[in-house]
Length: 259
Image (cartoon, rainbow, N blue to C red; front, side):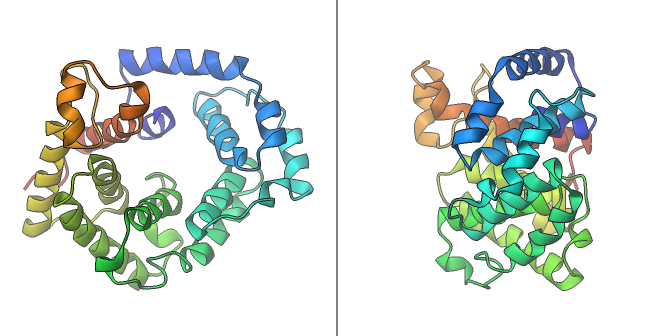
């Protein structure tokens, strides 16, 4: 979240405090031990390295060690579904070489979207595979979707983001709804009357799931518990981070789809 805000030039006193705290924690953690025993740690380590770089600081781990793990094929030592392979390719693009970004559209073709699964058959995990794919394909809004995808595929993706948003609005899942709206912002979905109406409704849903303390609950069923202080960090952290990015990027763009 902090890296995305920094890369979109979104700054405030609160963000600065959070950044200093995260940098201090990141500098103390033993990333080498984590990476040495868990092949999935490649993503975490890459995100941390990118976060430090966005603050003009060297990585809090030896990059030569990460190169060594990659060289022996350690990071590939586990089974991954296609969008998680995109996760790895994106991570290697940050840590090893930008050339790994060229693998993103290849793996994207094997995802639910790439296989042209009908939207009514999408599971929640399928929707997450779309949203995460968009994060990697656009480098969290730093690149254009058409840098890696052809124009036809990019346009189909934008249209399906709209349709999926309409479907998720009928469900009680603020978390995936927030990720979908973030994809709208990163993909520059067309600003039509219908799309504006849909975006506003979804944005209002996110706001209605937000407590006065700043938590955003993943389901409306949790809202009453959150308002009475009965939710845990694990209950709300991910949705809160996602929606913080949605709110901040939308404000930075002067509320797109404003009509």
